[in-house]
Length: 350
Image (tube, rainbow, N blue to C red; front, side, top):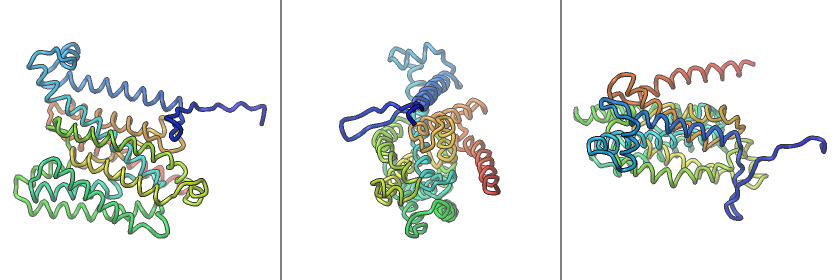
């Protein structure tokens, strides 16, 4: 078709081995989301029981603020803001990978049991040993990996069908929820109360230890997910097509699952099992970017914006800093899930 012009997307190359196709719309969407994250972050740093001006916040961030302002901004508010951004980005990418692998918009780690497995491992460490952040993170990773292996093994029948992965994952998630409840009943009153608040999903009291752990995990795992995610579009076409185009389906799928479970596990260890961000962010990102395949960078930015906005909104709406963000995401996510299920049901009837 010589008379038809085809718009070509620019390609950015990193040496001879790695190249990335850049979609102008996706770049614009991510830029707008980053601007929104910055605006909400500044709002979160300015408002609260101790209101600050924009100049005071910027001065504190530049290292020129008075001691009291520095304490509020750098010790109390900034770690919480950064934790929300990092957890949201990790959940957004993890959700995008699992939804793509399962070829199902319900294939989110909080729906198919991986988040529940991470929570189970973390709770056992938290209540059983009273371990610190690294011990809880280790238990969360082990629990998430164990849940992923179990779901993957039960769903494997010469390959992993998306609907089978979702259905088995929902069953495993229900079993793990009962395990979590049983563990809580065997704990002391204070331990059970602390674990129950953590199970809701909260960013209250998050400090620089959690931010450092999250930053290290995201800095390593997010580029890996983007690099491995280049095969996701081919895997969505089916294992046969992917193999014919030079992709090893099971090896690629396993590597993506490991990276995504690690992202969920670290996020769960630092903030608890925050629901529905991993479910909603990838779908919102796809629609914003108008992407046929998984938009991993867009999902990261969308997840970060959704969680940060939910956390700042839940604090300011109720006039207190003690409302767990998991309550806000569950309320919004429940409505989104109902809308998603209704849309799937209507498409199934056509």
